[in-house]
Amino acid sequence: MMIFIYGLNYKARRENLLELFEQYGTVTSARIIVDPETKRSRGYGFVEMSDEEGAAAIAALNGSIHMRRPIHVEVAVNPPKKRSEKKSVEQAAN
Figure 1 (cartoon, rainbow, N blue to C red):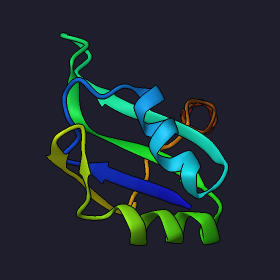
Figure 2: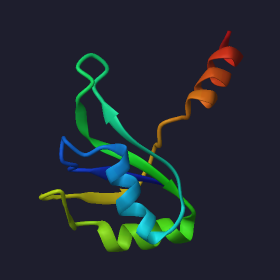
Figure 3: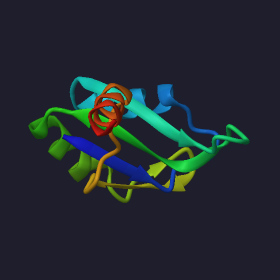
Figure 4: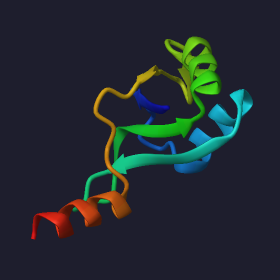
């Protein structure tokens, strides 16, 4: 399950997401989205976990305070593609 987290503190890093979500199970991937030009956080990110563990994390963390900010945690509706998937889609289009 891909989980969308927004409202993140702009100082939050990938390690902070890992620490937060690993309390609920194994994190397959975690990333915070950054502006490509400034390299600064955009205040949201994604975590991937198993469905059962992800559901527990969402239930526990949605609306909680993390790094002095309320965060929103939900199932990602249109999760971003992984780089390897993007390349295969681009190659198939050519």
